[in-house]
Every structure is written in C-alpha cells, then in structure tokens.
Image 1: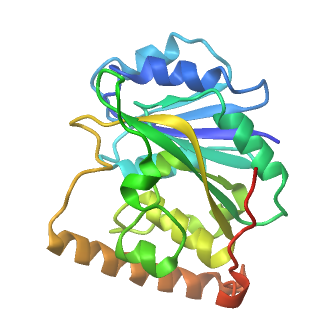
Image 2 (image 1 turned 135 degrees about the horizontal axis):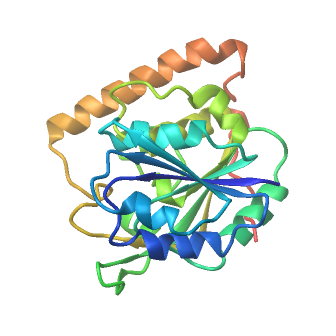
Image 3 (image 1 turned 60 degrees about the vertical axis):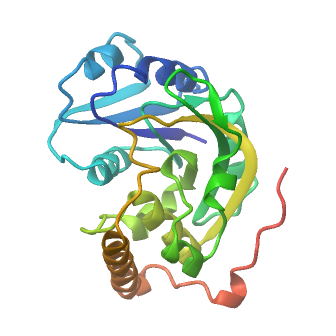
Length: 254
C-alpha cells in the first residue's frame, strides 16, 4: 500500500522542519510527501529542499492565495492508494502512519475515510488541550457536520476512490475538510478513532479554530449544501449515494 502525505504550505519556515521530520521518519521507500506551496515569501521551500529526500515532491510557485485550493493541488498530484492530509506546523506522533496502514488494510475496497484524534499544543509545544475531538464534539453525521463541521483536515486520511467524487473542489466551500468528510459519508464509510496521533499546533496564523460571523457561517453552510447537491447529481453515474439505512456505524476498530 502506497501512502501519499499531502501538505499545503504558506510561509511555514518556523515549524515545518519539525513536522517534516516527524512525517518522513514514518514513510517507507514507496511512499511520498507531496508539498504544494502557495506564494511563500520566507524560507519554507529552502527548508524542504535541504532535506534532499527523493520521497518529497515539491510543487512551488503557486498563486492560489487560498489554503483550500492549495491543498487540492497537493491532493491532485498525489499518487498513493491512501492520502493522508497534513498541516505544515503540527507534529505527528510515532503511531500515526502505522495505525493508518493497519486501518486501511482492514477495509473493503471503496471510499473509506479515517479521522484520528490528537492533542492541541501552543507555539512552544506545550499541551493545552488533551483532545481535538473533545473540543469539537467530533463525530459522524451529515446534518451534524453541515450545521457545525467537526472534520479537521490534519486528522484525516482517505482512500484514493474519494477523489472520483471530490475533485474538483467547487468555489465558495468553507474548507476542504468538511467537503471531503461529507462526501465520504454520502458515498462511503467514515470512522472516527479516538487514538491520538498528532500534536496540533494552535498559533495566531492557524485558521482552524478561528471564529467567524454568523453571516459567514450561514453563507458557507448554504454553499456547502448547494455544492453537495450539485455534485451528487453529477456523480450519480459514477457512484450511487449510499442509503441512510446502509450507513451504519462502523464496528469499533483496534
């Protein structure tokens, strides 16, 4: 099983070396780390290039000015059977990719998405919250996650089959993680596993825990629901939506 770690970067020189080390130590020779950089003006690319690691594929010179379409670019250029999303400023614990490999090896072919827990750290690396899931109330549910998204990209891994329905990303969706998570629920299986595999770094430039106005949230939910409906209509000939009765909660996995 080939794994592709897909990472979007933007002016990440401060933390990226530590994150790259924590990822590369878990990749084997056939795996890859695909990094799409969006207009960095600092030393981000130089830090990555100094690794001289053939498993790292750098996509420089992009001008998306948007993290959603930057990570989409990384995903598009990823070749693995399983795609694991990564932030530029976290730290992966040593158990992450071993758990990912074992979970996907136990799945039937099709669209499968795994969401893993983690702890939250501050800029200096001190744990400030024990669980991402606890803070977000994370879990499955289409209505639940349309109302208040609990998918976080840095916690997600999914089978390549998801790309058939997820790409291209539409405009005006709030974030890539809610789009990928909800499509996974519509067309495949999702499991939230409460094993901590990352240290998620919260700092002023990180967008994931920012608060937005009520107007912004209503607008984003409207566009997300609208694009899900449009994509479902377009993809009927590719994959049928799984009936609600078939979307049973996965058996607990260990």
